[in-house]
Length: 103
Ligand code: SF4
Ligand code: SF4
Image (cartoon, rainbow, N blue to C red; front, side):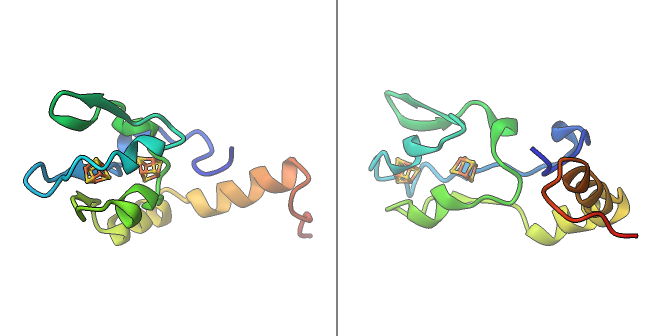
């Protein structure tokens, strides 16, 4: 996957936070394809935060209690800019033949 191209995932503070006061235990977040949550006697818990796909907000969008939040995306974008991640992603995609190589 070319979302980060080797930049350490742990350096990017993007993962969900649950407001337990708002959680109505609907279970929707347990559909996360990256298995970020575990179900506990107190409802969903974020247990693998760095498996969350950077920039994804699906669980928050579909949470019945509107209980899930994420950091500001602009902070992530700033990191991508400073670390040249966009350029690296493009290069990797070109190497994989998914984008045409530019001359
Ligand atoms: S934002 Fe996406 S990847 Fe991250 S925990 Fe929610 S559904 Fe999973
Ligand atoms: S989707 Fe929201 S309300 Fe439903 S269990 Fe998860 S955190 Fe709680």
